[in-house]
Image (cartoon, rainbow, N blue to C red; front, side, top):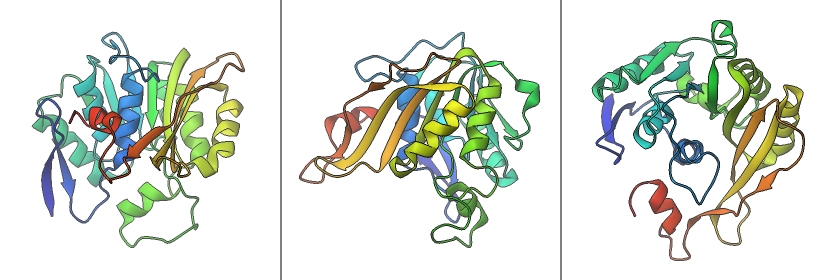
Length: 248
């Protein structure tokens, strides 16, 4: 069964399935991180002349939020699952954004026609290796959480092919796979330049990381940003989270 969620950003809405995979906080954090250019003390970037590609776009949440937070008019979402890509396309039409966002149902490992055409690539890849952890009977949820149709290296390799020299990759991932992430980025000549950990509350170990890499960037000079704390001691969202969710 499908339903429509209000994104509480410029009257944007998204179609979701009650049985399928639904976007989470990681996608919201990634879109905001990319919209600010990997900085925390800046306004949203002017991206009107930029081309953005979101790999594994699911129901299109990241393209929709980027359209709401920036002026970019050339956003592509790539999704391998036909039903998810269809929902994403219908959400784009629902919001009247077909002139700014296009959704393509493709395997991200086969995007050679887009080589070196993108200024920015965003990715929220599956966090778990195939066969690891608990599996899910719902195929869309299983593919979103596990590396069934492309692993970390596939996402980074594709990003490296799509990006222009000097273009930026923005990813959200798990801290316990940080070494895998950095190794993959350097393997495909994307140099990590900004790293930010996200923690549920002050004093707890981080459970999400955000990273910005530059295609062909010089090694070194990695900026470590202050942690992003999600909850206050009383369980309410921190002011920064409220700002990211446009609820300040």
